[in-house]
Image (cartoon, rainbow, N blue to C red; front, side, top):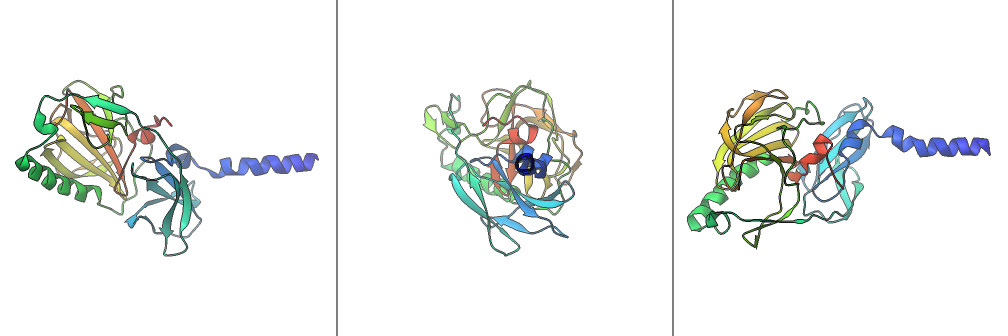
Amino acid sequence: MRLLLLLLTLALALPVQAEGFISRLLHKPVPGGIAVVDLGPAASAPRASYQGKPLLVIREDGQRWIAIVGLPLSSKPGNQQIQVNGRQPLSFQVASKHYVEQRITVKNPQHVTPNAENLARIERELAEQTRAYRQFSPRQPSNLLFDKPVNGPLSSPFGLRRFFNGEERNPHSGLDFAANRGTPIKAPAAGTVILTGDYFFNGKTVFVDHGQGLISMFCHLSEIGVKVGDELPRGGVLGKVGATGRATGPHLHWNVSLNDARVDPAIFIGAFKP
């Protein structure tokens, strides 16, 4: 009996021991979250993809490889699959998550119902930003436990169903920090600046590529302090907090994209709430 209990205890403990720090930090498999899929041991990094897009693959604890899968807010709960080296797909489960509503009043009606000229501008800017989100560089991210980009409290969480002047628009695809105008914004992890601009909705904006499809976007800045091609260390200042674009006051809006899926940045700073 004692032997049986010992074996049962060891069996129950194995999954916990096999799960490394990165898996515990990032595995939040809900719409707008992240799934960590075990790829097993191999001499070199496997190639993995999800919905036709390459995935971030790293070695965890110096042993097995894991794929880190960004799940769009549009993901349906249930069984999902990734492709690995063209072999049999690997399955994982997506759980459900409820996101609450947010109602916002903005002064400029063009930020709710743009005219034809502004719509054309928005389409051009969206295409430019989409290309940035879809970049996939071979560099491995320097770290996956991120720093907060500013030292302000979280204001609007990720995933809110948003209504501007009573009109429903796209869900909130990032995390907002309340901060004073001019507060320095720091890179949460090392990366390369791949895009800057002054956009209709986002205002002054900076995109940073952390590696393998992991992209940060910072918007509503009062001032951009970097240019395309700049290499930022962790903690490097990239700009200052402002209220440009569609913003009701000074704050930082921070997006994190993984395999071209906008995911909850709170996961990367250990602040995710189920």
